[in-house]
Image 1 (cartoon, rainbow, N blue to C red):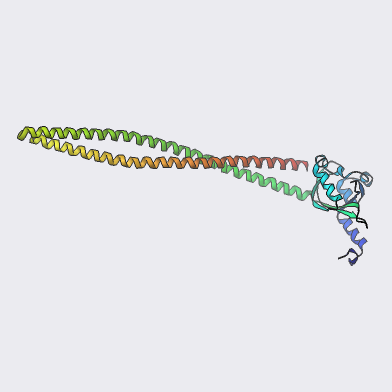
Image 2: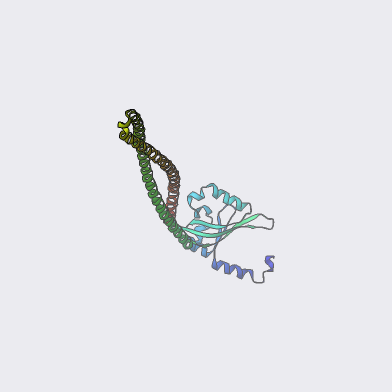
Length: 284
């Protein structure tokens, strides 16, 4: 639809926009050609103070001297409009945020006559967003602190469990030594019982009572050996289970340690973001 087909007076339309928004015209060389009262009020200038000054004067020095600023104007000079939220500096040095549209104005030959900017002050909204963002970061930081403390507590408990498991494993080794000693005694007792039975047989009738005792000694030795072997087998199962548990605890501890390191890195990033937000809030 052509502009000429708008069913209202364009001058009245412009007056309405002029009352509602801050507007300014720049020459292609970035100097000010015209500015309305709303812009002058927002930026704290008089008409005489802005006419002919460079657009750089309204920008932060770091931005005005940057590659991004040069590219910003190159795109405008290539007839590419820009819309977005920008940070600017008033005559009093206050940093404000503007939601702005920059649009190239072309003549009949398609050449750029001027750069038209229309904007509205959104500093309060941006400050609120910054404060909410800072608050959110603080909450996230508090949450990661809680997670970090919990992870550390779990690591401590896992370390204690690992130490206890190691002590159990050592105790089973000591018990195995005792069992080996018992098995050795039972074997010797069995041999003694066998020798005693042989001697009792040689003694004939006089060695019958001694033979009965020798047989009981042999039976007791066999039972002791069998019991010792059963206990040894059970201890082997326990030792195997303990070693498996220790291995699992070590794996869990390693994963938690990796998670803790990741949380530490996240906390550093969050703290960096909090610092940046605080600096930005102070600037505003």
